[in-house]
Length: 92
Length: 265
Ligand SMILES: [Zn+2]
Image (cartoon, rainbow over all chains, first blue to last red; front, side):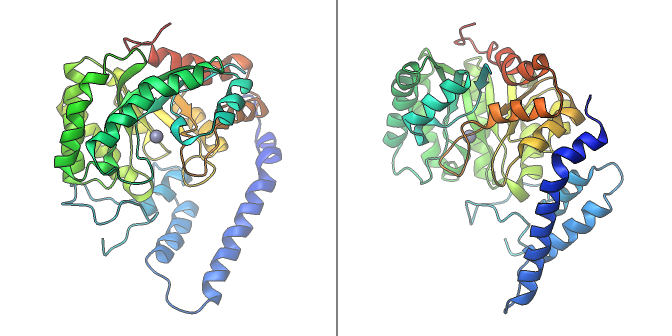
């Protein structure tokens, strides 16, 4: 790789800063609104923790994927939905 | 910038998109059979779709100097009704000799169900019977890790030559397993929910530039038919030389496609 750390910062710092603020504002937005957040919210918060402290052998990106992933190993009996939520729904 | 689109769903795209990708340097485009955004009501609906993929789309692409190829199957989203899927499977063989058919795909899993897996295995058997390569769709989001593992286990049990299989929509958590098992890995560049340009380049840096391709999917969702060339430009911004960019966006897909009997060198 020819690019150095500062080249990567030049290319991606501003964009990542922008995305980080969007995440912070999203969390504020969920906090501010009425009602109960569903399973996606704790999954999101634990993915942030996983990103900050990735398990041994995982990159930060892999740790985030793992936090959102279904870790069961057997095929399910049948599908009740065709889409994916982005996080494991404990009721599915 | 000369490039190959190895996975684009042009039936959901306008003719203007063909013009744009041709102007951007697309020489070859491969279109896997997929879900149409709704469940088709009869096997006849698939029959007409296969006619579109093997007859009409190649002609539409040729108007812009693009060589169009296709992969045939019933996609996993419509495979949950196994009886229906088997009826569709019966009509596929009559299309396999069409000159633009590369192999069986994109087969795979959607919600990792028993029926999806059974129909996946029947497609794999069909590919083996006709000695054709396979293009695989891995499930999205929370289902990808499990689905990729189930798919790899199933292919190993069927003794499929991994060098003739592309496992597509790979991401950071699945790509190492795909490559370590000898399969090709596809990265789908998508403005949302899949893989960004920057992350695709990260994965090339982390997991190597062999047996990988990039595609735009360019389906009916919010997607970008120009994503591959944009990623080529992003690689240049990250100081990659032209020959490396060409390897990833042209030479690599060409190397895999050359394993398909109908692919013209
Ligand atoms: Zn696709």
